[in-house]
Amino acid sequence: MIHDFEYGVDSRYKNKKERESDSVALMQARLERMKAIPREQIIRAKLLQLKLKMEAYLKEPVYDNNNHFTDFLEMYIDAIYPQRSKFAEDINVTPVFLSQIINNHREPKEEFILKLMIHSEKMFKNVCEFHKKTWYQVYYQEKISDTMSSQEQWRPGIEKQVKISELSEM
Image (cartoon, rainbow, N blue to C red):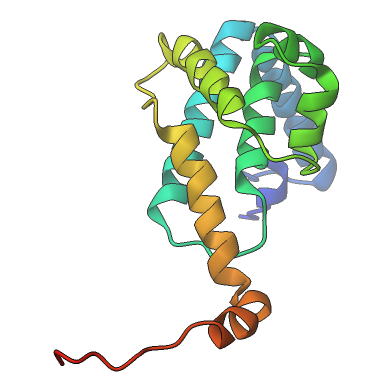
């Protein structure tokens, strides 16, 4: 018995042609089934996946220079909207402003995060529980990560400015 997991089928065939034929048929059946899934169900699945990724990010101490907030923001928008400009319209910001945030050319202001929080509350309402504070937690967790991962750059200059005076009560 030959096991060739590349084709996604249990390979008990006499020849390669027979095996490949069945694997093509299986893939076509999977694609047809995927096409029949309603858009709402796909959005629900993507939102649930995003929530789980955000929760995993918040549980682990990640000290890197990646911009997780904007990665999650992109996933969120792209899961729901075919065009990002429609999301920008729905939260009353310009597409240019949204693009600048996504491309890390501008920090999101508190008002933007508040709008994102309210928007996601409404979107997740019928999907799963999504805590209001999640976007804030991701944003500030990233700020902590950035600070901790870039200590080599900022610490020498700041350390020179900090001293410990003798305390008379020690």
